[in-house]
Length: 291
Image 1: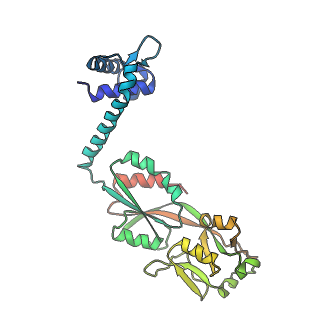
Image 2 (image 1 turned 60 degrees about the horizontal axis):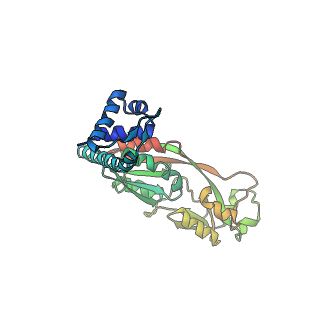
Image 3 (image 1 turned 45 degrees about the vertical axis):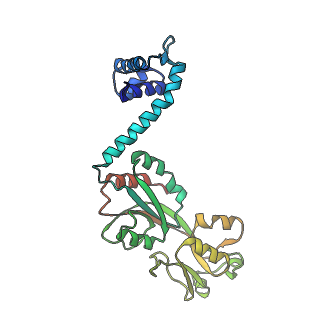
């Protein structure tokens, strides 16, 4: 009966185009790879390659066997991964919580590589404000958070910066501030401010209260909708404001004296109980410099 080694030699020869290239890929001598294929042909009672040319070419029998061989190898790899997981401390499920103000499209780009490295892990994604995510990590409702940097991070969390996102001040095109160039920031105190606050009423360290008249929301998409209704001015990530800015419904505040936009750092945050496990080290590595 044919073996996994025979099937692997067969598939790799097809992929690499020659027995010598397959041997290099498998880190074996060419004679071993060739013998595996010959033994497979004996077991199948059929020639799998036409060897009359410079390079081996699949025969009709080889074409028929190839997808079945690949399915067996794929299943064998899954079995090996499952067996390794039996004695591994890697969690079976990882919950990643993401601040709504950080684009998931950027984060999604690393997920296929993470899945390739750890195929047995189930991923769950949550969205919340940064302060709510820090609370989730305390209770281990989430095992990794991607948040806007806070001045105070609990000592039980490990964190590192992975980039920054640009913010600016915005109002609806119908708002009184939209049609004037203000001389200084004091004008903002005369109009309602729309501000992010966590579900337990904590305010972010970089979302400062300026106006005595404030309405609160727990995510930036609600702030955007409130701003579009003319309810007040707010600080938004530029990528969230972009569509409404492009279609003219939203206006960036104009100040004579200073540019109000700034870069907000983004951190990946993990509980110390888990941060030294290999999967979390890999996740941090993949997230670095994405932004």
